[in-house]
Image (cartoon, rainbow, N blue to C red; front, side, top):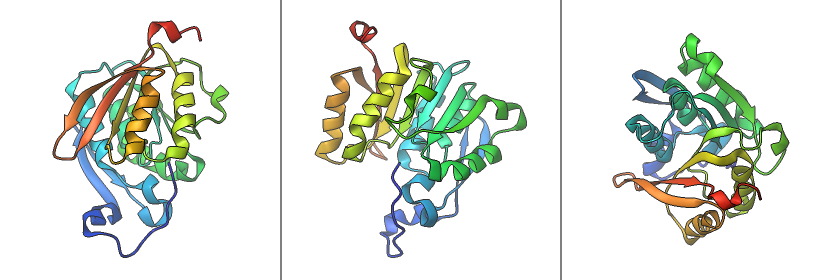
Length: 218
């Protein structure tokens, strides 16, 4: 997550990002996610990659129910909320400045009987990883978190820490620049990677990654 300044004269195509909320229906629930671009920038709006990730989770191609999941760079928390509604026990993470906003969205959109299945927690990639169990998650989720080159190495360190040889990583992203394909190349050096879904309308790719067996003891 990067905190970016608010720009009044934004492109019309970005106007929806300045709305105070975004509404969706996933997992048979109506969701209303608060947005606050002016205060938190990219961390506080729902990006297309998150929507496509939720669509993919609903397809049932990856087992979610009963799994331990963690969402990285969660922003508004949409993906983690939907994963919880689909039956996962979810740790939803972002950097400290976004946590109050993120927690409010989680509380507002999860029914009381699902509140206990979600924990909101601070995570800056590559830092304080010992607070999270090594290889302790079945599913790692990230929507539109591949865009700042300076974060690529700590993001990879974080993925390696969180994943066992049975963990599935799902990353939803646009491929905007060469640096994005560079990240995929870096990821392929440590994980098996395959594209499992493409939303042509939104130009969003979903990549599934997992550790090859020979890295499990490294």
